[in-house]
Length: 178
Image 1 (tube, rainbow, N blue to C red):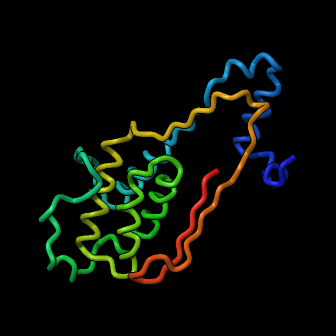
Image 2 (cartoon, rainbow, N blue to C red):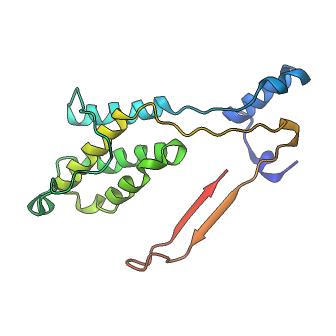
């Protein structure tokens, strides 16, 4: 048994899924061609949390998570944003969603996260645009396919780290994929 498997808690969704598969017997393996994890509820949660914070009831449809060129005014970078106190919490929920199933929103979230300590009106606008995009693209999802026999599968963890790789501020980055 691999060390990572021993360390997993038996209450995790993965383990419950595997227990269900095993309880169905040998023939059940061949009925499963892929496992799809849908994070629709987390996407909805992030949008609803934003609506609650801002008091908005409706969001417009937008094609990208980025504000159009010219819509962010330099004078708005000097004014304190209204969402400054709630920004970090909102961004962390969004980042969790991005890491699980929405890689298309990682860039705008990380851009905003660099401004948490000096949140401005332009940051408010960018966060609003990001949430509008999430609301407009609820059907987007990351889907993985595994067509091998489950008996032949192994759970592997791949990690990557970069020590001080960002020359602008010498920040370290890390990541992983399970």
